[in-house]
Image 1: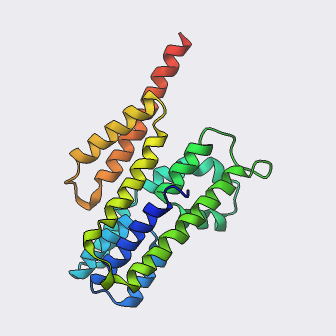
Image 2: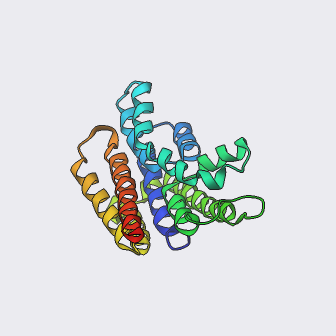
Image 3: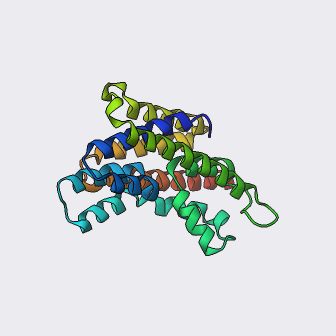
Length: 223
């Protein structure tokens, strides 16, 4: 987690600055930073709020942007189903792209979490808390010092580079490389789709391609 925390902090700082310079009241900005905890949703909702878009439009936009977490949650379910509902809700709030990727990479194919095997939950909790703290501290710094942070710094690009660095470390076989490439092509091809649904399309393409390639590989091995 330490290797991507600086990039996440850069994203948090940029998001805090963007929300503050948008002209939204400080109370709204603080509530969004601590309560929403989703950069894509926040950066999509803020311009709509600035122009006075209806609340349902803001909600639907944020929902569409975050639909990928339905898929993420389904993959994390084997490790979370042993928890009481209240802790599953907390895990849902703390879930982020980085924590999902790291947890699935480390424990995705392993034994489901449980009383006798708490390692996946401990790993998720540690990564999620570090990510949450890094993000919110940086976001609050962006809110507090928005006027002093030059846009020329390109901090958003630093966050993107951190995610790319993490992605490269996960490309360990042909299946992951092909699925990632197809997801990137799909995201670019669908970039003009409203509500940033190209993100969801890319996730669906990656999952579908990965499952299909795994089945093809298993079928060849069984012959």
